[in-house]
Amino acid sequence: MSVRGTDEAELGLLLTAAQDGNRASYAAFLRAVVPLIRAVGRGKLARPADLEDFVQDTLLAVHQALPTFQPGRPVGPWLGAIARNRLSDALRRTYRRRAVETDFDDGIADTVAQPEAEPAPQVALGPLLSRLPERQRTAIEMLKVQGLSLKEASDASGVSIGALKVAVHRGIVGLRQLLRKEDDHG
Amino acid sequence: MADTSHLIERLSSEASAARRLPPPVLRLLLWGAASLGLMALATSWHGIRPDLGLVISNPVWLAKQALALGTALLAGFAAISFSVPGRRGWERLIWLPAAAFWLLVAWESARPTLETQAIPDMVHLFCPYCFPVISIGSALFLAADMRRAAPVAPVRMMALLLIAGGGMAMFGERLIHDDLDAPLLIAIQILAVLSVGAVLAPLGRVLFRWHGVQK
Image (cartoon, rainbow over all chains, first blue to last red; front, side, top):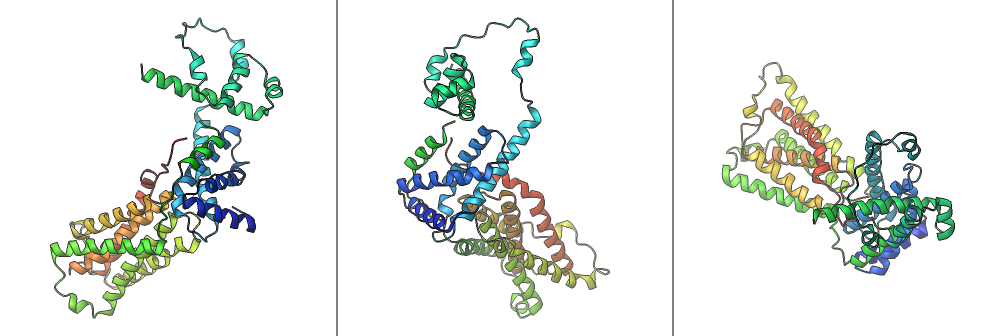
């Protein structure tokens, strides 16, 4: 991972301070490395959600690997090794998913006669929705509840179409997990 | 899944002073000392080989022992270096020349006797007590050390950990037993250690994993 000399020194200082327990420096370090990590995954992970997953995985790995950084050593190779490792895992996950999953085209379902479905169990989604992060909740409400198009929702919220897609995807994953938890607790 | 900014906030709010891992050389020395402790344990059980005083004046025996110990330590150093992100490339390959030279010396010593010497049977390939105690014990010490670090190359870490443990056991075993010095036996043992390292390397994905915090 290439980091400019001045950035390298600055990142090294932030990371050393973070190791000493300075939370502000740690937050600043993590924010500063997000674009560098994203650059490693860009072009290799096609879906924005996969790229964001990879960035977050790498941040978690950085958190775990924090004690391994030796002050005075360059940050770039340290961060690059972690990012490449997480990228190879992300790519492996992507290939595995592609092997079992084909993209679902909503349009096909409308052209095929559907068997009469059994009534789905009634679930109150309102309380679950309120437990999602605001960005995901707003995206789901606009796109799935109010039925706005991506363009309309983007214009109304000022959030890009790509970010809206990611937020909806994550919101639905989050809702699924919340539903599963509710089921488990009876 | 939380947004990246939320994740950063959470990670930084949870942060406390991290206990830095010692430099790889110090970690290697600690591991070497722990492995020597295991050898001492095996020695207290089996006793030292009766002719140790004689063989330590034999330069060929000493060279083979030095190569065994050197390969074990260098493989251990490479394994530790793999567990620290961003280390230099040569640190990870440094064990290869030692292992190759060790194998070459063992093979060259065994070659003249190849036609006359029968292949040793599996029972006498290694001591069934000393070898497992030293190899598995020292491999476990090294694994415990590496699990505190970062699993950036789990498969290679596992392979090297097994080679380091095997090399250490081959070194220790010859301080205890006087019936394991046949050159062909040493060559077979080296190949067996390298093969086990290669075959079991994928287990590294199970042993060395990212854990940390949940998203």
